Length: 91
Image (cartoon, one colour):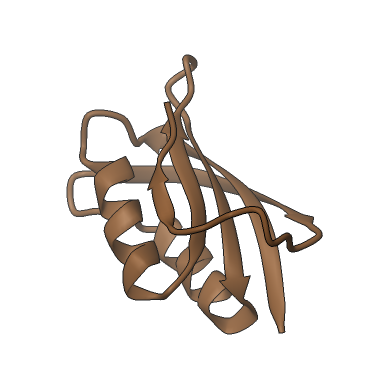
């Protein structure tokens, strides 16, 4: 069963390869979606795919890459959709 999460991560998450690492991890898990920086210093992601893989990706976001310091992860759930393919950085 698929599910979709809209995730906003705050802390030291820009300039620490958070987006690139998110893409790498999401692709490894076979997920669809995107990740982008927000102007306020947070990172936003839309994660879609197998429910267990989405849950693993959210847990990964709580730590992030080695240089990151994650203070908070806000998750909101959405209906899964078929319009996404692959996982990429969204500008």
